[in-house]
Each structure stands twice: as structure tokens, then as C-alpha cells.
Image 1: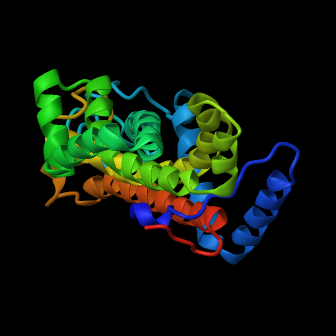
Image 2: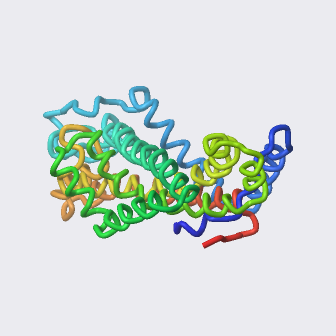
Length: 301
């Protein structure tokens, strides 16, 4: 998903208007015309619910070992079998959803906040501040996303919050660019120019007219980026620089279950499928939200 996919001419937010009702009508129309987005939303909701209800759904603890069923196949007590340490694979998959969603959601939330603030301010004020922000973004973009995340985790250490920070750092440039383009467009709109000409302070203009129009589209951008964040977190864990054992994590499970790739390849398939399904669901939902936010496909980039 490119920055241009969300960079449209924003509509002015007016108190007491029927924007909420029209947005709901667009949502219903888009849901009827885009069943893939509805399916994606339902699948993502199931994954989130599974992560929240993991202690209820999982038949075993994620770290519990069954020494009498090491590397065992599917059975009544172990639905998907066990790994090389006798841990229940289904239980670890359910608990692994927590780690993947925390990494994906946490990193995107941090990137959303930082990127929206700096991008909006850079687009609104321009000048030296915009130039400095642009230079910093260009420097960050000089590193490939995954390489930058690996460098940050190696320097700070492989734990949950450092992984979240590393992935968010690689995503902030995207949010900055989208927010900046939206702020540049809004700055030229009549209602913003009118507020400035009437003597409103920059803080008032940003609070009442700019941020309320920027934030909804940035939220849509965040939804489309969650899948990439989850995939990045899984890649870091697979490479051994993400979440560390014994924390259940889908990427780490793919790496650990690789020892069965020739004898029981379905074991590697389970966490891989969980990653793929969740990422695809997030992308489908994000694409549907883009159509709701930008029904005419208007662009400013």
C-alpha cells in the first residue's frame, strides 16, 4: 500500500454535520460491494479474540511439556501434535497470536502517533522544519526495512518492546509522508485559509481543522500497515533476533519446527499459515477501509 493510496483531498470536519451518517452509509455500501474486506475483518477479529481468550481456548500451557509425547502426531490430547520438546503446537499457536498482534499493533500505533505528528507539522509549517524532517526520513529510508529493524534490535537487545520500537522506526517514514501530503493539501483549503485570516493561532488551526481531517486517513493507513508489521516481527523472530524462547511466537515456531520439514512438513505449515492468513486478512480489511475513506479515488500526490 503506497502513500498515494490514501492521499486524497480531505473533507472539512464540521460539528453537527451528517458526516458520521454519510460515513456509515459508505461503510454499508463498501461492505456490500467488497465482501473480501468483510471476510478479512472477520478473520482478523477471530485472531484477536483467540489471542485475548488464549487461556480459555488453549488446552495446554504454551510452555508445558509432555515428555511422553515428544514430536507426536495429532491426537485427542494434542490437536496438532507436539514439537521437539513435547509442547502442544495448537496451544503455542493460540498464545503466539498474542505476541504477533502485540508486535504488529504496538509498532504501528507508535509509528502512527509519531508519523502523524511530525508529518502534519512538517506539511503545515514547511520551511526549515519540513526540510529537517525530510532529511531525517530520507536517511531512515536509506536502510532496507528489515535490515534497519535488525540493527536496532541487535543494539538494544531482543525483547518485546525493543522489537516494537525497531519495527515502528522502520515504518515511521511512511506515516510521515502520508501525513505531510495531507497537511500540505489542507493548508491550501478555503476553510483553513479563512481560519488563519480571522486570526486563529496555529495551535487552534491544527487542533480544529488539520488534525481532525488528517487522523481518519492515517488510521486507515495504519490498518493497511499492520500486516507488514506482523510479517516483519515474524521475520525477526525467525532470524533469531526477535522475541526469544520460550515465548511463543509464530516466526520463532517456523524456525523451531524446521527440524521436522522433511519428516512432518505440516508442522511448519501451521505457524506459516497463521502468519499468512493474518497478514492477508489485515490487507483485505485495509483495502476495504481505503475504499470507504476515498470512494472516488482522489489523489494529491
